[in-house]
Length: 250
Image (cartoon, rainbow, N blue to C red):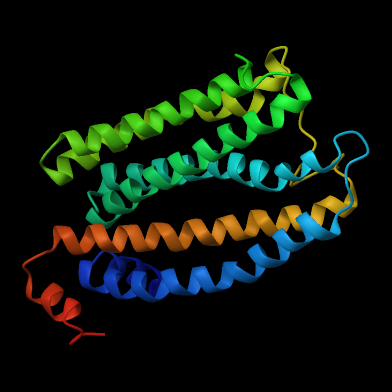
């Protein structure tokens, strides 16, 4: 336990974080690549067409992982923001703000793939359905956090203000999750569960979970790479950053 606390304390040091993020981002990308390749291969070529939706159902293997990630990333961002608000750890501020554009990207992919899927299933590109509408609100919230962070010149003050917005925005996540239960919805109910029985056909489950794992690794690698770049920008001019950028300090 003492070693873990010591390591977490060291991780708050910008030079030490830079070293961890540099190698950690690459490790996450390499770890996620096999899951992405195998998951995409099975989803496109191995899994048979759905008996009702045909091949159009294959968009599920992008849509579902992206939808889960849109909420997961927001929760991680709010967690980092809360730690930064309480203990004023600069690296946590950087990590929280690095999550925002990545989460916005996953949310945009969710809405786009949902629209492409909805057209043949519902006969329309868009409907003010509770699940779609709350997911759109989530995208706007991400964009609001990004905008607020970039509107304030003082980086630390900006991160604290945007982080507070992320913490308050956590209240939206259960609304998104249970929107298909609380209101009448065109969107199908929960068919995939981490805990408990799922109604998803067994042949679809393996590639779907591979894509879910791949997106987790991709997010971890991306947030470390983005946070490292932001950390170097904030620490520009210091001796350790010059050595690191010149390759004199591994």
